[in-house]
Image (tube, rainbow, N blue to C red; front, top):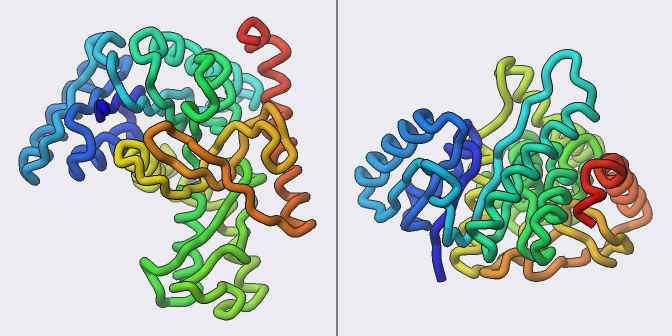
Length: 316
């Protein structure tokens, strides 16, 4: 099995993905694709030097064209357009959908058997776009979000407790954004239920801070958004595919009847292996959680309906 990985978008998130993979020696060949070829070349050279320092066999290269992506087992797509003053949500949606369509169209020509991991925002709608444009089976197009959101929740649990770092398992499903659904009842510290360690008020505070974590980081950085945790979370997904680990991670996946929804992408627990999202895991949700998940699906559906009306109609 090829373990060549290509990353489209050599910005902060894409660079962290590449660096993480190179440091662990998970892929022999890592390709950086970016409109700014010189930036990609500089970062690739720097990462290859770092790989040599830790005696990793990984080689990072900048793509001269999409031809360099040929034969990739996994293609990570981080390319996207940041929202600027005066832009509506719909403006951003169409702008990034155009970018996604262009990238996926070129990728499928040279790597028709690749697994796509989408990181671009709005995450769930862009994953849906990539799936429809590529025509790939649903298991080969996955969005990264749940690992990141769950990691944020785990850290906020640690902040409340002051102990248990590295032993905290948090669970977040739903769309990436305001309508994510943190699941405290499926969150534990060394196997101990969260409800045995924190009060309901403290748990509620963790849930709210998890939902706003991305905005909190933007508030501090002022000129950008998070990239270390998103990049590492993406690299974890790539590792699961390359190692065929069959581990379960929360990811944005296409639902075809699971949880009672069809033809939509949303965050759910997924078993990841060499064939991508090999199995969607259906967990039991109480009535409140079901309603929150319904709202999450509805928020993504609003964007998908806009795309299907005009942008994706020819892909059907």
